[in-house]
Amino acid sequence: MRIALSQITTGPDPKANLVTLREQALRAAADGARIAVFPEAAMACFGTRLGPLAEPLDGPWATEVRRIAEDAGLVVVAGMFTPAPDGRVTNTLLATGLGVEAAYDKIHLYDAFGFAESKNVAPGSEVVTFALDGVRIGLATCYDVRFPELFRAHADAGAVLSLLPASWGAGPGKREQWELLTRARALDATVWLAAVGQADPAASGLSTTGSAPTGIGYSALVGPDGTVRERLEAAPGLLVADVDTDEVTAVRRTVSVLANRRLGKEI
Image (cartoon, rainbow, N blue to C red):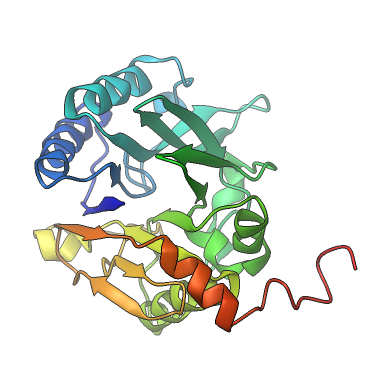
């Protein structure tokens, strides 16, 4: 399966961000991708007042994402914000196109490093996977990468590929943590992991203030053995790469960590 990792820098205007999504999706399709994965907060960057921007999954922003997926002829996975019942928003991944229609609400909220995502965002509770071309794919978002049980849940549901859109917070050691955690999650769930972050705004000549996580770049495709197969740097870019799903079977035969578990499943 050929997939595209679209590392972009989104701004506060959802309509302007849709223009970028369309351009990137069409480029990905021209390179033969079946999925174009965009970062968390593709709808609007963190540091923006999210409540007034949030829309339901049948609202105009998501409807346009579906149109982009249809026009490009692939699956688009993009982060957006939907209204939550308690007045907050939900940090949602929409996956749409080629008969796929799925939505994942971020389970683990980024209440760390001086930022309190839960102040404005309500957590999800459901593990979400979908199938494309006979391949089961799991959805996760940013801070979820610190919780290996979610990625093992993807594997237990039959996934061989996990998609991880993110808007990673900058700071000392944060790039090293991002690279370590993405490799670890691929290895301890023995899945392919496509980690797609917001580009570093500074690499696009943009300045940021405050503690909002606005991205550092370094999106990567990690194999089920934990090795980085392809990687971007800090600046915006489009990475198109092939995922050999048969490799998951071979790795799981050699490193049987899922079958050998004694905790976290019925024994």
